[in-house]
Image 1 (tube, rainbow, N blue to C red):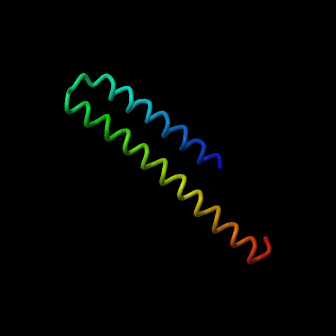
Image 2: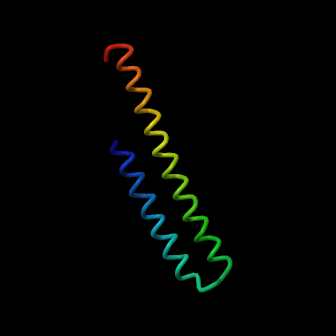
Length: 69
């Protein structure tokens, strides 16, 4: 759970950085593209981390109920 919290915080930091670059790109296509990629990749990373946590929690719950843990 701690790692999920850390990963969430890192993703939020990268989203803020991407948003800042997006706002300050001043219409430069290269900077705008880089900011969009930063926002996209941080969002995808957050979704992957949350999905992995959900899957592990689900499997651990099934294992506990099956094997009496």
